[in-house]
Length: 317
Length: 210
Image (cartoon, rainbow over all chains, first blue to last red; front, side, top):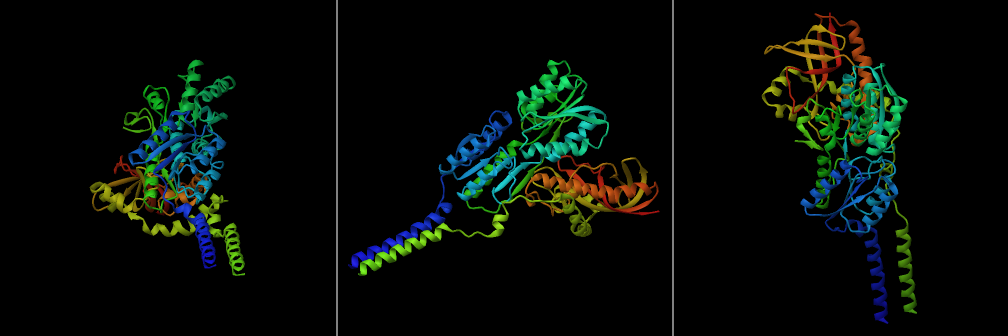
C-alpha cells in the first residue's frame, strides 16, 4: 500500500517537473553551435556576398552554418524557419524578404527562444529581432540624389526603377532620392516602375520605358543589378552615352562600371560590416550577452568617378 | 480506499497543471512592443524641436575651442563632442560662435568668427538642406525608437522643414554684409576627411545685430 502511495506521489512530482520543463526549460536550454543564415535571394551577387560573409565569420567564431535561400518568397522563408526551429540552431542571421511579411517568422523564432539578427533589411516590428543591423538607405540616396541633380544640371527628364515593393529599402531609397530631386522643378520624372531588384527585369523595364520616353537623360535605380540591366538596355538602344545611370549597393560590377565611365554613381552599402556584425552579435548572445541595440544604421557612401579608386566591390580597399 | 484517494489527488494535480499550462499571462508592454507605430512625423518633430532640441542648445560647444581640439587631437574631439548614429565615419556636432558677416550669397553666408587665436571663416548653409544633422546632433533620437526606418527618416525631413521655415527663411530676408551675428549651428564631419578650413554649418538659432 505504502509503495503505491509513494509511487503516486512520485508520479505527481514528475508531472510537475515535466510541465515546468516544457514551459520554461526549452527556451533556456543551450543549443548547438549552429547558425542558420537566411537570405531573401541568392539570385543576386550582393546577397550571395552577404550570406557567404556571414557564414565565413560564424565559422571563424567556431559555429557550423547553413545558408537558406528564400527566393524572394515569404512562404519559402516561412518553411525555412520551420525547419530551422526544429534543427537545434542557436541563432538566425536573417535578411528578410518582406518588412511586414517576415515579421511572423521572427516572432516564431523568438517564441522558440532562437535569437534573430537582421542584416541590411528590416522588419516592421519592435521587440522581436534581437538586433537589426541596417543600411541607412535613405541617407545614402540623399547623397546620390544631390550628385544626380549636379550631373543633370538641375534639368531634364528621367525614369526610376524601383526594387521589390514590399521591402522598406525600396521605399527608403526612393523617398530619400525624391526628398532632394523633387525640389528642382525642371527635373521631371516621366516613369517609375518596379523591376524587383533583378538585372533581367531591369533590362526589360528599361527597354519598354525607352520606347515610351526616348528623350530621357537620367535613370535612378534602387540597386546596382537593375542599374546594370538598364545600362545594357541603353547600350542596345544606342543611348548609353546620353543617358546617365545611377545605382545603389556597391556591387562589384557596378564599381568596375563606374571606373569605366559607364555607370555614373552608386551607394556603397558595406555588406561585409553588416554580415560580420550580425555573426559577432549572435556569438555574443550565445555567450550570454542580452543587451543589444535594437536597430543600428550602417552609413552608405557615395561612389563616383572622383573617389572610385578607394573602393572595391562591397566595400573599401 | 486510500489508493482511490491518492489516484484522485494525482488526477487533480495533473488536471490542475494542464489547466495552468494552457493559459499564459504576458505583460501588456511586451505585447505592445510588437505592434506597428502610428507615428505622425510632423507632430513628433514639432514636439521634439520645442521640448527637447531647444533645451539642448545650451550644450553647444564654442567653435574656437572645438576647432583647436579638432586640429590638435581629432580623435579626442570626436570622443568628446561627436554624436554618431550607428556605424559610419560621419558624426554631428553642435557649435556656437559670434562673428561678422563678410559675404551673402543665394545659398550661403560667410562669417568671420571672433577669435583671439587665428582668423577663422565658416560657411552657414542657407540653401536647401537634406541631411540628418538636426535629428542626430543631440543623440536623443535613435533608429531603434521607431517601428520602421521610414518614420525615422520622415522625422528628419520634418525637422529640416522646421529649420528652413523658422530659422533660414527669416534670416535670408534681413541679413546683410557687415552685420554682426551670434549663432548656434549643426555640422557633419567625416572622420576620414577632416578639413578645418572648410567648416559648413546649418544654423538652428541665429541673432543678427545690425
